Length: 285
Image (cartoon, rainbow, N blue to C red; front, top):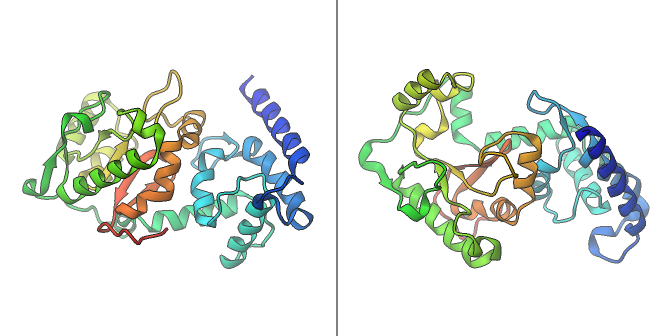
């Protein structure tokens, strides 16, 4: 039933785009050149069957905000400008410049995003970063902690950057200003020994990453509440759940602005962000 619904929505989206492709607006320029590719992307965004992280997924809208940011466009997947920008990206990175989104293009994008995470680069070298000394950790206040889980600690410089980020989001995004739950932290610093003990107690080691070497051990990783799908948890990895989060104004603001405050995303988890650099008001990802 779910696959049938996805297929139906995909067809509706394509038909709607086809009817409005010649509408005025900067995203619909170059229709004579990239219109066909835009139609294909509009359909695949909701219906493409693929497995970017092992499990089968349908469509790629959960990743669209990060892709748009990388392509330097606000135009949606079903537009000629998106296709044109995608073709330019593909050509720059040695791929055929088709303007069509596919798994090979995503793998290049994923590699770029992962390279921006120092923790991931350390792990590829076989290193596991040490936890910070306890005197480098600071306590969150109650209003910063999500009720789903209490976390308490972050590295002090990360906590300062997080507070600047939240203040900016509340000033710039009406959705965040209206809901104090948004951008609360439900996981910050996690002591490696406590992680290992919880893993053993709950039988939930997440492939041993939690017990052996989690980015949360560094005090620089934060799991932020960015909304949730009905009936799903705040960190549900179900594709439909992640898509709901990615569609929200909170996540889209983070994608466009978190770099100003030194944070980079983990593509698979819309809630997971890692601090990688001092705050730079001029930074533009």
